Length: 131
Image: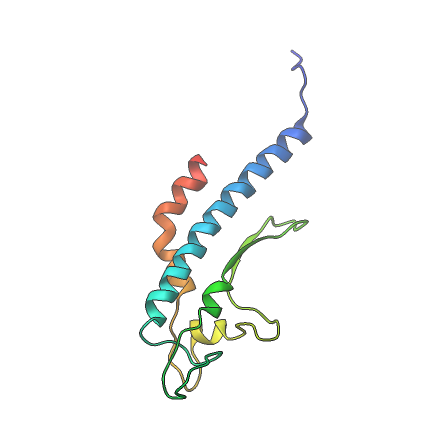
């Protein structure tokens, strides 16, 4: 029996594209939850980097770190990864995302990315299963 128009390469590419679209959508859910976590956590106790205030002792949240949370689709990657990043290495960017997430010697950890993934699992699973 011969299957008409059988093109396994085309089918594999289409399946791969749909899987990547689902992963990207799931990454968007995690990124949105991370932004919410960061806003609610730092709203009352914002981190000091990047702040400009009239009073130097008055903490102020600039939203710079929150604005750097993004979903990146790695093209040409054999592992077909979708990543959710926070922070930026650009001049004036929020280079301190890892310091907020994991803490430093002088500052306790205030994780926002890992809890976002854990809180989003119930939403992510149906996206991955059904699209």
